[in-house]
Image 1 (cartoon, rainbow, N blue to C red):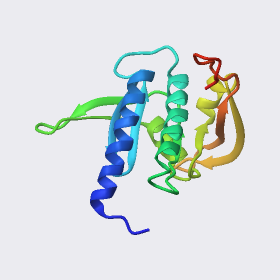
Image 2 (image 1 turned 90 degrees about the horizontal axis):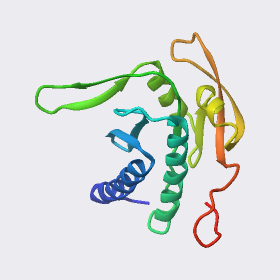
Image 3 (image 1 turned 60 degrees about the horizontal axis):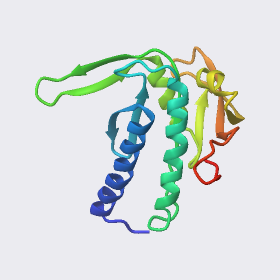
Length: 172
């Protein structure tokens, strides 16, 4: 499929606009976009009680949005990586300010996404623990940290254990 650059921009604008709406709905902060990547965090800048749950719900909804785009963009898939932990956050720059995150938590989240499978949500062991009672998971394997000092167990998040009932008796 031959895609023009203007079409890619239109696609990313449509997707990222929907993702931003979902992030706001779930109380998640969009941090930045880098090319085709979308970085978001829960609990920033305002602390939230269920950060892992907010990100999990956002991830599931993001996969649903991508499915909705399939009629116009066949074979469109995203990879989602989730990790939980402390970060350093701040504003950098003197003219074009940017709010960014740093730390091992961010590095592990990136390592969850990059080797992930298209259409899947890959979760670290740190996110698995607070989510395991509410979501279905499949153990994926292990991942060696960038510094080759730690081995992390990874999981694919498959969906909700108890679908949330919607108006009219349907489930989500």
